[in-house]
Length: 446
Image (cartoon, rainbow, N blue to C red; front, top):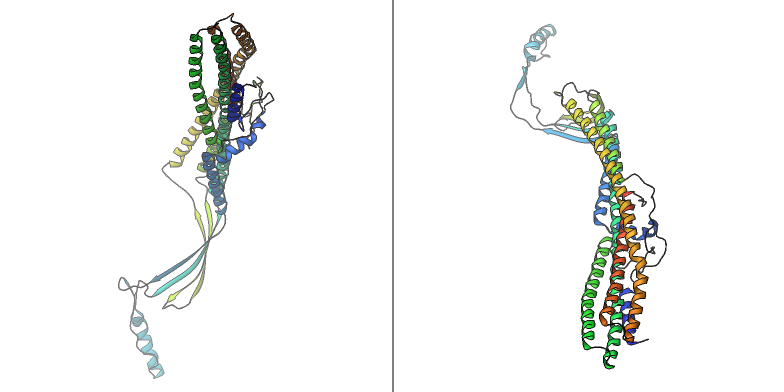
């Protein structure tokens, strides 16, 4: 093995060790499962959605707790001076009677009393009580609980919709990473070919069968290729940065994929966008039902257990009551709100119909784009073997001196370009496959 090949292999190992490698195998959605789960785990936006779901669950628990009793403690203590007074003419009423009784009994057992003047505001008075309230019939509580329950379903659908977008992003990032490394490999292969051409040209110059101009042209081509290799390395780093952004790690396990995706009709699952609209319509129906309960009464039980007295005496008491509330008139506000909700329901149904048509169009376009991308890649693929064979033949003739260096460089350029075109077309085909998977909601979402 010559030194040029050793250098090429060492560089190739440096770039490809521990990286993503393409082999011809069947690829399925589940092959991305571990990578996708890692992305779900590390996605900050998705984590935010999960906390919103926790909030919705807590709101449902709160709605259920509204059915239970509520216990409060209350204390009223008052000091008062002045204000209105209540006059009780006790003396005027009883003194004549007492006087007659004293005469009849010939005693002073019934003294003269004064009229009473009592301050209306209680002074040095306390009222301590425990109040228990229990709703008995509150129609709004049942509807509120249903709305909170449906909100949880809606939040779950929002999470699934975001997860599906992440799946597509992860697939595209993986395909871009693979393509970037393949392009780098192509440039290193081209560098090896040019190095070999340079060695042959130097030998031909020594033998007097080639001009130094040929060597200069090959070295210029190598310099151009060197700049392209730097760009390819930058693309690899960019792909790694994006992969790290998505999954939290630069290195990921390789996924075995075919050279090109198979164009097939995926089983269409209903997209989360449609399910969210169905859920929104259901919640609007509950809001409409709430407005229809406007005239229904609300019943609640109230029980007070406490003590009240002046000068901190103890006088226990029990007070039970039944609260009844019923709406009679609100200046037609509930009627206007019903009309508003009904309009929203019509709007969301029309929006759903439009979205269904839009998704159907998206699926058809995605399938057409996938088919076109695969066919385009196939046209490049079948030419790779031909240009490689052509280059081998031109190189052989160049060594023999029967063709000039321009034909050799042209053959090398064609070989490199067709491989680059195929790599990019292959990447595009797989990205169109990921788009088709997204459009048809084929990837299973937990």
